[in-house]
Length: 597
Image 1 (cartoon, rainbow, N blue to C red):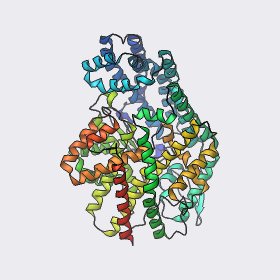
Image 2 (image 1 turned 45 degrees about the vertical axis):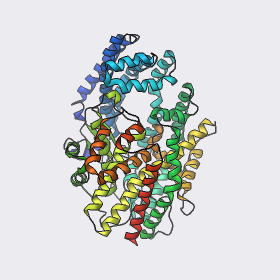
Image 3 (image 1 turned 90 degrees about the vertical axis):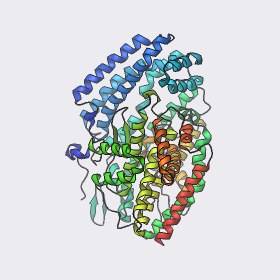
Image 4 (image 1 turned 120 degrees about the horizontal axis):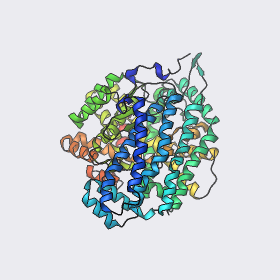
């Protein structure tokens, strides 16, 4: 039998991230929690109902910013440690300590934006004139004023706000604590299965019997938890719908897009144009790969397979450092130093272990480390994941030049730096090795990882979300079976009738935590649209483009997403960047067909 994943305590420490960079010891974390509790209490006692006085606002804003920074450090320490060891009761208790403090601290801080939004805009302008660093934050408050509730209503929502995160907590508990996957057998050999093993390895396996058997095993377990997971998700979107109605929005989608400062047409364009125009290119690509693998039919279990190649070798973490530094060298010496820090200071968690959160992400602490979660397989697709997450790290390291209140840009832009890194990495590697087999292999990886993941997987999530929110606002009945029907139909619409989209494919909605973050999935394709244009410009005109690109990343949330893209030289008010990106993917498929045939 294949080995199950090791326990967290059994993985090499050099493959884990170092959260002692946040707080040196657990006792330091607990002391910081106690101090934060007292500081938020003092903040409320000092400044609540005093913000009509300009001198008090000018004093309060830096304190509020400092408390926001400390809150992010505390939550990061608590949940980064838990995310890599979710079955560890001690880690869960440490996270619970934060939750207990945060439930009291959040409303003690949240009165500040509530009271400021109730002020005349001329008063907010005065504050911005006196403290220019906070001007973008104050501009955002003015934008939110139209949907502001009464002071009492806002206070009540602030008290309840921590409860709104419970649906995601329930989802995570089912996913990481309750789900146990059966072993499965292929050709007389028994294999263990898990979320990490399936999503990071089996799903991409070139062994068709193994891949399909692992898929059957995986979805057999998911199906058992369909209804409880559906109730968690439906609770999430109902919470969003209630707040949307309270704040006077015409639909839940409008409310969620307002949070991103993005119009409905930008989201709809991403979904509709990709569904119609990208689908034919991706169908060609998958058919080409299926032919190379000798598949008799293409099922939903076969969609993520890349070309088989002698170059499909495992890469060590240290080998990935040199590869990525070379590929991203166009971004400059300081960017390279940031990559070295990520390795040397152990910002990256490479380990595969039992109880670790799936997928990958980057969590940057303001003026602190950028923690990157992976489950390292060493395959090229994982190298591209690391390039992606280092893109987030580089972005937020640069954005820390802004105030923490102007730091976190709209979701519409958030995936641009990360996806640009993926495209840039592949393009640089293609230029470095002219061997046709390598070219075919890497183009396949670029399509199947970067474009498939961001412009198909996440885009189909977005199409699913749009349909679910529309049915929600139309008061249509939703449950686990309905969600599966919607998801399967969306997948079938993209791939067409030539592909065998199985019943199990309808369960795919259960795999994504993104649904608990509002309208996040469509922004991957938006970011990749910007990222593709920037990666091409960085190749064509590196000296001028890199300065402009890094300047854009330094702006944080001081501009809207559309303005940030415009500053970088990409006009997303038109559909041209999206259509250019789709044409680029079509060109990649053309190149691949020529190389393989």
